[in-house]
Image (cartoon, rainbow, N blue to C red; front, side, top):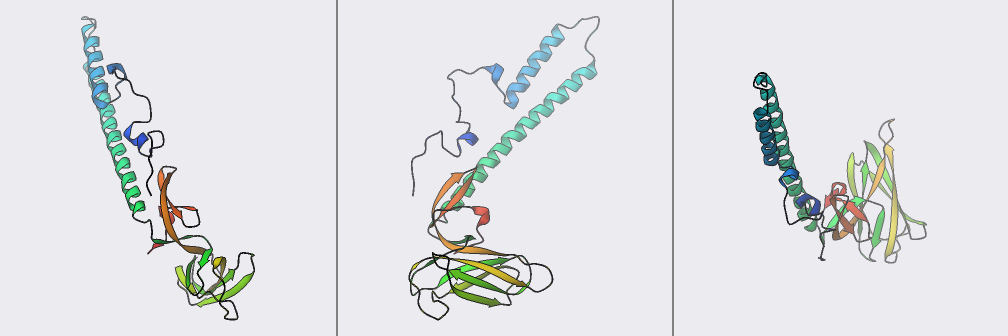
Length: 231
């Protein structure tokens, strides 16, 4: 899905230097480029040398010190320009990567399960440590627990599970939105956190807070760093 974007909302406007108003005439006194700074310094130095007292000329060490300082300023300006170019390139790469995810399934933090009657639904649980098992409790739209799954010997990290869409008695449940929660049994005395992950379709991409955001089927926004798995 594409839409027209004006310069005020263009995510790359700040990087391209097009966010502010521009003037048709330039002014060398406001030139902040490395070359502009160096030119102004040299003009000032020449003027200073021409106006110096012949009986008390400027010390060579002062000239050397000033030349070293302007060299540092010039180098910093060049580095800043290079960094801006790098940031712009990185932003473009992230946007391109995000766009290729549209239409795919992504495992992202969340506890939603969208059931189509007769089909399996996939979810996942991220465990913070070793566990002997974890239990998934599935609830309907009213918050009533309709089924419970127990997964034995899970690994630390991301673990996926499949729900067949039936209740605790094996009866097929109607299509609709369900949620789940997870609880892990620690393999030691240390507590293990079980974080639910939902499997959702990526429907669109937006730009927010300086980075691309994936728009999921349920309308939520997710950053690229929060995508645990893509299929």
